[in-house]
Length: 266
Image 1 (cartoon, rainbow, N blue to C red):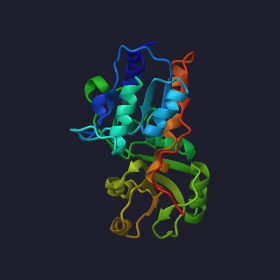
Image 2: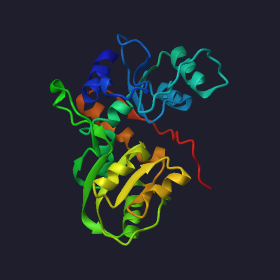
Image 3: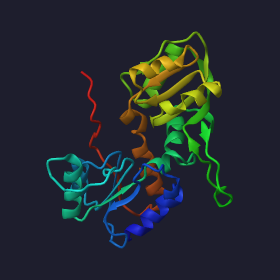
């Protein structure tokens, strides 16, 4: 199998044209005509993940986050991005990222996966993007709004999210005296969707990367839950592994065991 068969499939799931203008999704390192021995799926394409791929005879790393986000003018092994790219090139490991294009599709996308982990139903984009006539097969949008079938109190819902998402800690605004039945969410940095979450009638908004002053924007109308960037997107690894394994059942797709989260709690 050649790499283009894999990239063509991933770009069918989440076309590159759906990525945000600032993004760098797609093939970052490698030749689409190269023979593939195995695929390593990860959230980040760090040097440690590439080492893991090499050790498991995988010459392709499919990550959610692109290791190269901005232009590189010099390659210096003192910087982690350069080290990863240099190692990938030295060992003929292709690097492919499927980032905001996967965020912006609902079907088989990041936010649908989070909704599934939380056992939510009636999942729709929180902010829908209009689709061109030729793209009616895609439900496009940022974030998600969904229903929690069994209403929970704020404190019960925090415990519920910790259990379903495998979390030990959650930063959140004041627990409001209301039953949670409608949940807004956005994997990664989603503070830009707060007004849509409130307008949609959500009692809670789950996302990451909230700054101190941004928590005040809840304004007593909604509970903001910041579960962490890595934590909110961790199950994207599972999503990508499922997609590749289903499409290529006779092919080796592996999930990295490397924890790439740069944030630690003590």
